[in-house]
Length: 284
Ligand code: RIB
Image (cartoon, rainbow, N blue to C red):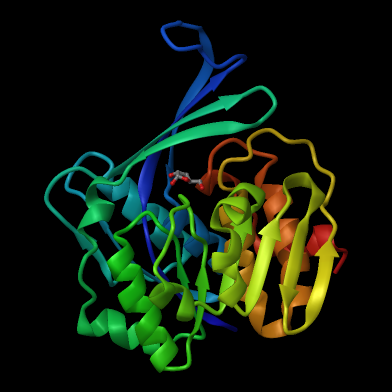
């Protein structure tokens, strides 16, 4: 069983469902609303856990009415929360609009996630003992760099999902072993990805593309009835990390199946499949 550590974000998603997105200055009636725990770090941690690995989470919630629920979603999934801090102020929030095609638009207010600026001795020891460090860009990038460098120095593979996308320093790219990007992120990052040994590009319903020392290949998508794509990329990434030790081809198969299943329900953490559901879809 792989040991994964996620150094990343956790947020409460405010999900509004609408038939049509409003134009600037326009009001439309929505058809549903839910609050669902999310945040790319937390989603990926739960996905990696459900796909079959041991997971520890390093991050921060605030002291507000969302904090207990955010902590509980990780605890209930069996993700280790010893290194989840509670900090003064609000927890991270994401405002999400989902339309009837299942596509989403998201605004993230980092709040507590922005306070993850230091790694403790315990965080560093957890990173050094893990097989894979999993990071995104919803916490300060300097913390991601510190975590990645420490991982690299201790033989822990570094998987970066550079989302929300931004240009990163050569120092950070030099510490990344595996990048998971969607097509938009790949286009925006361009040649910065050339230095990364393994690059996995998600292609939505069409599956994913791999390039790296094992050559290049496509893993086809799995046809499902799409309800909400929120968190599908996170589920893909968590499952990929959980199965990375089995090689890229097997890991991408797990990731594509898990990501497809995550689109069949509303909400990020609420839609992350259990290992048995993924195995069933893979015909195992
Ligand atoms: O990737 C989906 C996630 O992005 C949501 O859960 C939301 O919190 C935003 O961080």
